[in-house]
Length: 118
Image (cartoon, rainbow, N blue to C red; front, side):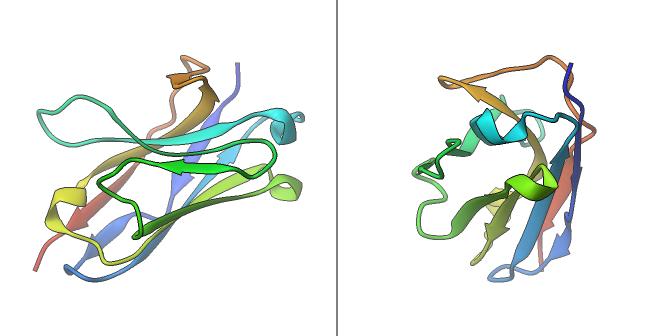
């Protein structure tokens, strides 16, 4: 199983920015497509962004133009730069390996809480 450790969340005002990080415990990180999900209170898990091993990215319509996913294979880390944050972005954010739109592992990290509020 791969372990994931998310960090970088916090409380931010609407319009603000945060950068999330997710470190994965695998020596073959570079071959995996990676994904960020989020879960808001009382809501189902939502796919936010994906990045392939080659760096191709895809985003949910709700975050297009505001969020950017990237990766550093040397650090086994995937990032999520979040700009122009809105209250509806409030959620716990998780990363995982992406298997054609499904999470690759059951070993979820603790997530990182993002709260957007004035």
